[in-house]
Image: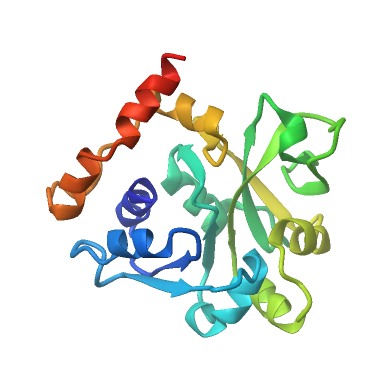
Length: 228
């Protein structure tokens, strides 16, 4: 979470909504720290609404803005400002969304996209056994009011990957992350991420939360897991 908030802050983004559900109290205590208080908002879902459902539920927060949707269990190292600029100024005419993509060593565990010569998504395959390639959906998107209003109108749509993306095929631009992209919701990828280089946190404070984190047994558990 701190990595993502650092990335967004350094990119000039000052309005962030974090959806809370799993380990709500722990995540909220992290967000209540002084460095996040003025620009990061949280919303709690007792029952998960789905990625698209959360957007619809919070339409008043997003309406009239360009939306950046991030699945925060992605460990992403890239030139993030270039992704933002591509959507703002360089995406092909007629596209309504930009999807970050990456090359995956495990195509069957990802959503795989097929693109045309301009990098526009023509087909999408969500976790199939024999995917036609290894260009994967990175679950990081930018889009504007057209897609937001469509989601608001479609009351039964709750999943972004399986219900929104298929409706906008041939209108989704792609930007390939040629750096590091891992789904750290999987323990194997989380262990690999421990050895990745990454930018330092934007905030140099050592508050009570940081001190408690340094003493958390997760660090020893990860070392033991890496050593087998």
